[in-house]
Image 1 (cartoon, rainbow, N blue to C red):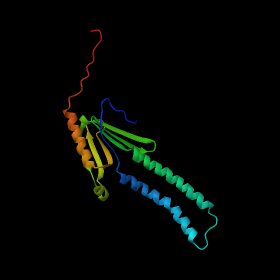
Image 2 (cartoon, one colour; image 1 turned 90 degrees about the horizontal axis):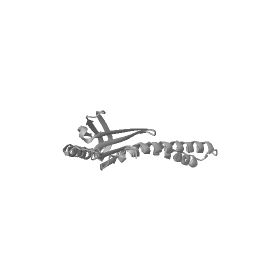
Image 3 (cartoon, rainbow, N blue to C red; image 1 turned 60 degrees about the vertical axis):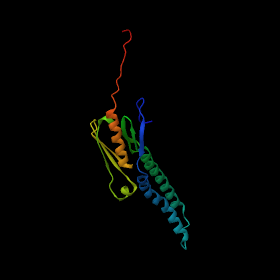
Image 4 (tube, rainbow, N blue to C red; image 1 turned 90 degrees about the vertical axis):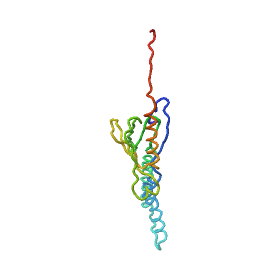
Length: 179
């Protein structure tokens, strides 16, 4: 796995970007996938169809290859964008491109503020949006984009932050041998 967890650390919540965001990125690819089929059907319905179909067939095959690669990149970016809330940390893995990833992590006791933002007609209807976590760590704020139910996730982060603040700090006692 990309992220290593501490001993005894439990995953409370795991979420990916909303499915609608993925569908909206795949929709143009689907349109271009249907386009050669429509053009071949239109050519077949004409009175004098073209007999040399090898060049259009080659370019449509090339188009399908490019579309498959683009679909794979979109799916990879969707699948590997993961938000994980544990009982000790907030972890956000953001897949930027095929070979570029950013992992943001902050301990729950360092969280200062959490805000949720839902803006737009479709995000409001489908209940997805962004979460902004303000921390006292090196990275002051990080944004978690297009998460389903951002208000519930925000409340859960704040509840876990309160629980982490109330929990006693772990004390590690080491014994020296021979004393």
